[in-house]
Image 1 (spheres, rainbow, N blue to C red):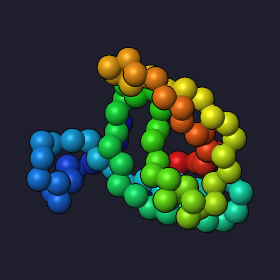
Image 2 (image 1 turned 45 degrees about the vertical axis):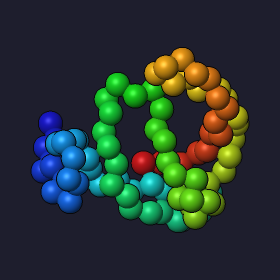
Image 3 (image 1 turned 120 degrees about the vertical axis):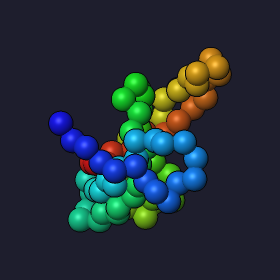
Image 4 (image 1 turned 30 degrees about the horizontal axis):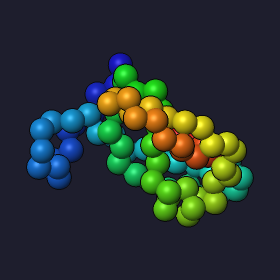
Amino acid sequence: MFTYAYDSDYAGPALPIIEITIFSLRNSNSIIRRALVDSGADATMIALRDLNRLKARKVDTMRMRSVNGVSQPVDIYTVAL
């Protein structure tokens, strides 16, 4: 079991936020970001500017449906967390 202190820089409600390292699978690039842990999520969302900085490889485009049922295309990239 892992435990982490809540992020005291965030003024909103207490949320499970951890520090992660995102690694490119194409090269040795990596970046560190704070991330919200959502144990019920079906996908991980990473800012496009971070994917571009890592030179992450786009591998596909798929459709994602939001909680309100709206479907839209999303690009899929390969990275490691």
